[in-house]
Length: 185
Image (cartoon, rainbow, N blue to C red):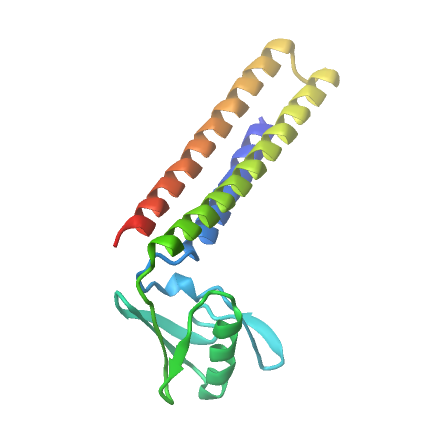
């Protein structure tokens, strides 16, 4: 059942993408994931800020992220990249490291972030439904090509639907967990 294995792989990639995507939504607590995937223009190219590429990133407390550039010449590029990222974060430069203070979220901002997260989750569900459609089409093609019987098609479709339902449940669980984080004060 290559179709089933391909579907599982594809849906795992969707879940991983969603996890990465919603980890960038700030929860009012300092977390290195808020900045590690930001694209920084430096050395004539674009690279991610992620650890081991340009700087080390750590959260010294619940309200402060500290970025220590490996090359002090990139400090201004990193600061500029964070400011232009649209993340709403404003790093301060003390000459050696960049510090980002994470202000507490207002109720309105929390609601906006929850809406944004729900939009990202819905996009993930659309990808899941698209993958289901492709898998169902591939199964029906196997029937047409007489590679499988009607019974095998029915079993395959049930298996595809079960995998899709489990994936949608996992996406909903991720959303519920993130919403709880966003609502914590």
